Figure 1 (cartoon, rainbow, N blue to C red):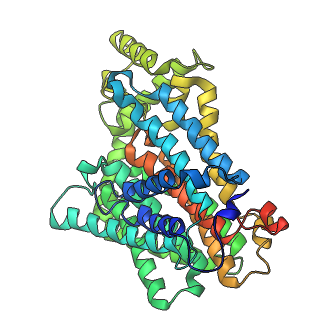
Figure 2: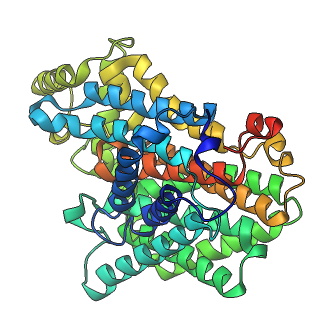
Figure 3: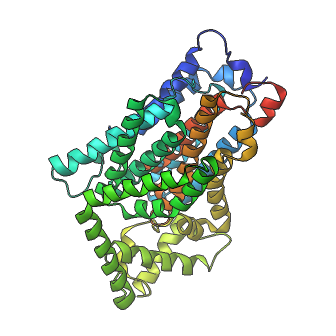
Length: 439
């Protein structure tokens, strides 16, 4: 028995599929608009998975779903090593999220969200509008120095701004694929919403997100050239115009952050000053690389890492400012110094599996050659927006251990499984298509 047996293309959709459709909308729609907004759709999926467990647990997932939930489960095991032993029972908080996310991934893949009315697209649109308006309110109405979301929801300016940028990028990519098949008001509303979300990232002053976007842009433009070969000049022009407008709107913020970054780099280079944002990161990276190379295969573990850092700082080898944080401010370096090369390989797989699943390869797109143009566009929109998740997260991880934060874990896991399940509902795996089965 496969997942195909759990749903029927005829008649009204079963309630589990209606539930996954609602969750696919809620995860992005509420992500940054209300405190812990990304958790509402996740809880809905968990409840559905537990209630329907006797029905779907016997079904056979496709290989893509198995790869995605398998690497998610393995990351939970890795975080058993990375968790802070001083947190007592709290050290299980992060591993459990990965394991429950894997469970929800199996459930939602068995009941893909209904392709109509495109719950991921409308969820992204609502989420971008919400994030953009929250940022404008905080900075221009409340007078906050930077947009930071909701402290009670365990986000801060860095995580909140980066996720706002990701929401905006995902919506922009969906819009690039779907604009011919949407009403004109929806196109303009989505364009404004994407700009508002990117503006929210600017108002958060999270420079790591801007670096991630800069690094991801060449890949995005190359993909646009492949899927829209005759429109790459127009797409590039629209992108440049949008970035110019955002920069002009926030010139003082951008200029101040750029000058501060330049000064902090110069202070570290000339005087070894590490008591600032950039200097502390550079000192942390120096420590993690040098200490990690002493145990490249096994790492030091979290407890050993903390003891070694305290001892070497006390000996004057590194600046005392790095004692303030238990993470290295770089995802791969943090894993390397604590778990060795095996952990780094797993982390790369955690990025790489979604990239492989969402990649809009020629064979995958040709498999929909006989489908209506709207279906092909919907599949492309899901692939492009899904690809943005691991690519931008890898960029965020250059300057931040994003998976040390509740928002980073929850958004990555549940947006990946939501977009993947939505893609299964539009485009079955090639093996299922060749055998005539539905996923």
